[in-house]
Image (cartoon, helix red, strand yellow):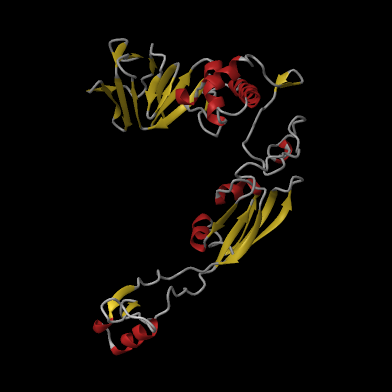
Length: 362
């Protein structure tokens, strides 16, 4: 597998303990290094080799391996196999090349709690293996990303004995339809019903249809999110925020297919996927409600204990009422009063209504 781990102008690789990295592609041949730093800028590629700085060609291709079974550190994570480093479009790209079964031992632990039953881990292993192999057939400089854009791969730290067992006991098992690998997409929660593939992509796949999904124990089975007026204006500058949301159509599973947003500056038509992206929603299986927004203008003033002898006439009267029927140990009444000049002010006055909030219920 070829897993895209990193794209950015800088990176640092380091060895674990005293086993050096093997770095190929540097001037002079293979080097043994404990630390490799790279910085790609307009002036070219600057390398730091165990503290020594050198200039390299921006088109340099480096391969980094380690005989240490603990892997290679990239940032805060360790990875097995080979790390391939190249410069593309002003960015340094790191691709992790390793065997698929080794890759899957980490994916299973990255996508699912390792303490779950073995059968669940095995099912995850089969789905992840199928997905990875199907993606590998598309070609390009890498097969999958290490994020939720493909399937999560967190390196060595996500491997456990249970995830390795799940992968080993399902070795080579994949899901097929009509003799071909299926597109084995998966997710953690569906909100109670999955979506038909034809509602997500251009073509309906016979094995990806809408079915009930009993995931009510998921912490995100039901959720809510509020958006204040300022946040809505930032997310939707075309409309200047949202005064109303009208769902024009839904899919058979109940997800938003198209919606009309009305705001101070006009209206906007969005499909469900774009609406989800613009608002950062967990799903399109949602309902919308506009609710009043109020907030405290300032925190309540802090009440202070003050001897009555130091109070004004009005404050002494207040103290007398507050302490009627008793006295302090000093013989003088003690009053809890707000700092001047807000003795008679309201505790936490409310601002005038600041517009409507958008409440999204998933």
